[in-house]
Image 1: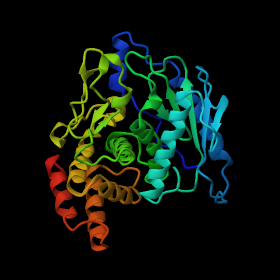
Image 2: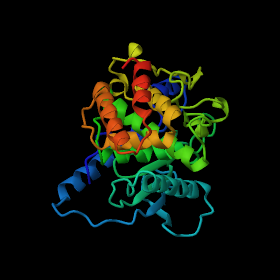
Image 3: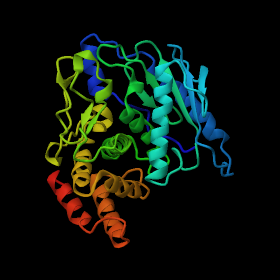
Image 4: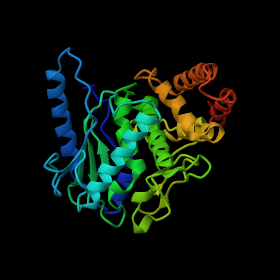
Length: 339
């Protein structure tokens, strides 16, 4: 198993902090999950041999945490099994299938690791837990509190986002800090929104480009966690604060919070992806982004990302895999955000 550079949750720290200040329980289980993950990762890395593992079947395996912080507690649905009476179980299972299908059919990638890794999904984590996360080996979904957030299994782009952190882990493994970390978050957003568009038959023009809109509770209707079309506008609410994402390098966040801005500054490459998708379709943009991901290094920054995208765009245009207009559209998109 490839070592993970991050413990990635869909709700960003600034939002969590604002909720805490306003007396909203954001879940107490993440620290335990993080510690447990690090111990499992240490044991797995220590036991890894030089032999390449056999190609797996990318099976979906769903567990019910039964409102505890114990994961893989009760097996409730396995690959090919009949639907459950539990909607959360079925959502997790079905959405994982859509993510798996997108990577396989659109990008030619086999599960999360391109080697048929089984997809482990945990639902009903803790009590009224307001988050979902990928920990380097499995997915975990909270139920939400029903007021601020609803069941996190209800959002396909959330599932796509978090599972895509796993794909990043097995490709560039972008370091989860500063600009490389913002690129890590960006790739999860880009793949999550592309998966949602593909599954719903949407286009770049008809998509809302909102990440997490489906998990916003009654008090936050019409808002989202992020907007890729218009970074900085996803939410503005007394409980959440104001969306801090910039859409231009002129407003790049340079502080220490949020692992030096991994969720905040992802708005800049998110805007680039949106603009390129409008120009050449989201599917074509996703193919360009994914092929570029395979050649990025863990410490790639925004300028290195721009160079890599432009180089890959020329290569794919010359090979007839992207329209000739791609190069100009890519140049224009990066210029728009000040890169």
